[in-house]
Length: 311
Picture 1: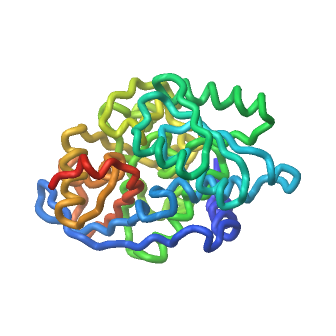
Picture 2: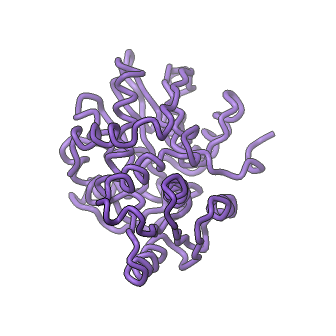
């Protein structure tokens, strides 16, 4: 479990090393008509996603004796890019283990950041096992993409910013893979603002965990799997979900694609599929806001192939 105090400590520790991302207020078409939504543009963050907040917090929080130790992480892309970016900022070596399915655009970015890239397996779980072995072999610090307290607390700083930027917000829609982002934001907001996890129907980690009362393994088959490809909700996310009454809604891949196209067509926001999931929940009616509700949608990442966007 992490608390608001952990998130406050993360903000103090990281300081101005990362960007305070802006909010864009737009109207989103829903089955009930156009609805005002505040978009938290976290895709403009260093490294192209929210992930740098957690990785940097974790590296800055390690004991002084370990400050120069190498870093290793398993990632479908964004967490690896964040770890590589944070490691480069602090001058330490970074190895990123990615599954063979990782998008080329993300692998190329990792290499451009100076990270050693190791391709292993078909799923995140395969990459994680290899990263664990490398950590033991090299005496490296192993970061986790979504289930490490410092990583979750760092992501939670987004919630603190939202409380200042959109003080009347009643609901925050957040894409969920392993759940670190949603958990961090929920911890930061301390249950005062509802946090709704949005998941592809082909990767329902939070949805299944809430139904079972604990994290369970789920099959993953989604257009957003490169970022939301965790096969199991993190334990930290489960603890926070229980304590804050977090809920989950599911969206189909075709609506995620439509939402991503909408963000590009109407607002020229070039984002990855995972970042469009919260908008997909509104487009499809999977989440139907009540009249007068103040909704925020977190646009979480931009590490995408721009050639896949519509003209």
